[in-house]
Length: 187
Image (cartoon, rainbow, N blue to C red; front, side):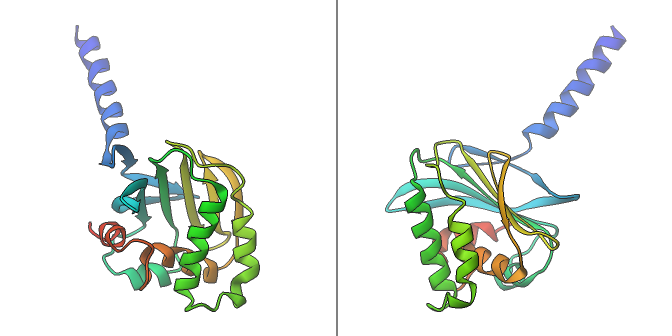
């Protein structure tokens, strides 16, 4: 009987750790993500809406919690953004247009210095994003931003400059969604 109790308690504690995180827009976002050998903590989470349609749940993961968007953008440290799609059927063209609008806003319209990196990034989007697809944008100093779709590595864009540009889409002065920006920096 004691052995059964012990096994039950071990199972309870192991599964309790799995369930931790937050639910946003009907989607579970974990409390932590791994970036290389670094464990990242969920900083904040929210839903990206476009024309009143819930597109994806987003989670910002950092090594240290922060409410300062400029610090997050400028910091050269591991971090990640998870997009967990709620809407079924976001086309590659729609993804590229949305990111490109964000890149234009973040650069004040001058994307020329990073256009080759933007083009390489856009080439990652070849399939429609389906409901429950997870897009993880993980930044590591040594490799830049790597995109994982449903845990499969798609590719990397090197450089702190591109990481700053990408995270500005969500956290910059002219973010794609002001409400989402506030929630990503809420914790």
